[in-house]
Image (tube, rainbow, N blue to C red; front, side):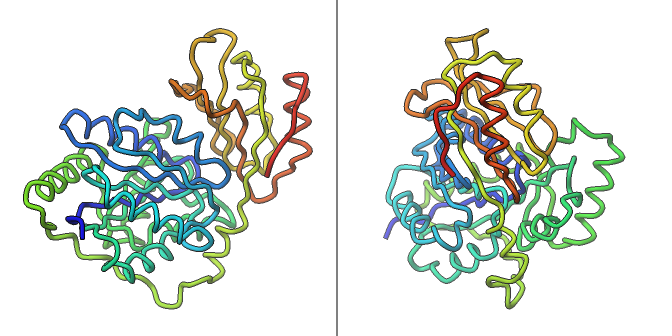
Length: 327
């Protein structure tokens, strides 16, 4: 049996900043001589997020495309975890997709503790300060992602006022008093400390007291919300104008909760870029994605009621052709 190593489970709604957190943690680990195995779960194409991570910073990166990792892809996820346990990484980071219900996975991991040599298992939820509690019918799912989380991290604080951030923080503290707020620096230092001690001693350090999980959760109405969000992927031209891709993202139908576009731009053809939209907001700063020739230029959309025909028409009108689509 391999020596136990830490596991960080990252939950949070679409666009909250989970992959950004993973990238930041990996960079901080790299500077301290620590490397993590990374499993990225996304609804339609996890390769796009995987491509945005510097592979030199990770021991391994494994994409897992699934709408609900605790259900139809649990066996595959457990297999990836077992592979990571046998690998050279000092710890394991798992990013769940943006509508996942992590409680099902936590329950399964609790039952499989003897088979999965990870300790401590830490569950952190990334909370989007812009949109927390404003998801309409999906708000219960957003709140479910916090249930059982020992830690939470507020993201996108720079895009809202301090009053708004304080209000979100107060609501979270009131409804989840057993969870503790952290930030990327505190989280990185804690994980590095645990990983170094685990590596040096070959034994597990004490883990935080696990948060209680509610009984009777399995496949309740909140969990089933995670199955209602679908994804579609549409190929894009290999090179587009930046203004064109930003215009497309801004004009996607309202049913699109989250969108990502991986492309080369006419203005900077030597690099590939990941453009993103969360809700109605298009990120002003695309992310450079180096060295990903195996990942085709494409638009990935996620939402409750995706109008695939309308999305295809917008792409066709913006770029003049559309070679096909998958969903």
